[in-house]
Each structure stands twice: as structure tokens, then as C-alpha cells.
Length: 96
Image (cartoon, rainbow, N blue to C red):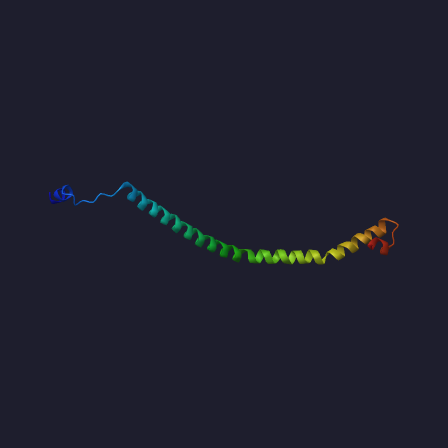
């Protein structure tokens, strides 16, 4: 009964709907900021894992590209030899 008397005597404070909405909006904004921070941490961890996993395949890809570039002169010489045999060109003409 004491609680009823206190609330009826005006001691109970009323909160306005705007204050309640502002508090809820602040909670939502705080949650959104926390989620953004967690997403940034997750992206950082994913990037570190991806960098660790891509090192070996990238090494082999670079090695293969170097081998392909190194073999271009042999390929050109082979094509020149075929041109020499199949046409009337001399070897020096086919290599041009």
C-alpha cells in the first residue's frame, strides 16, 4: 500500500516518450557501433588468414610465369626452325 500512496502523491516520476525513444535509439546506435567493430576485427582476421593461405600458390604462380617468359626464346627458335624446313626461307630469315 505504501507504494500506491507514493505514486499517488506525485513522488513517482514520469518519463516522457521522447526520453524513452532517445534511450532506445542510443542503445541501437551503440549496438550498431559494436557490430561494426566486430566486423572490422573479423575482416582483419580473415585478411591475415587469406594472406597466409595465398603465399604458396602465389609463389608457384610466379615461378610458372618466370618459366614461361624464359621459354619464349626457345619457342621462337622452334618456330623459326619449322619455317626454315617448310618454306624457302634460310634460318636467319626465319628468325627475323
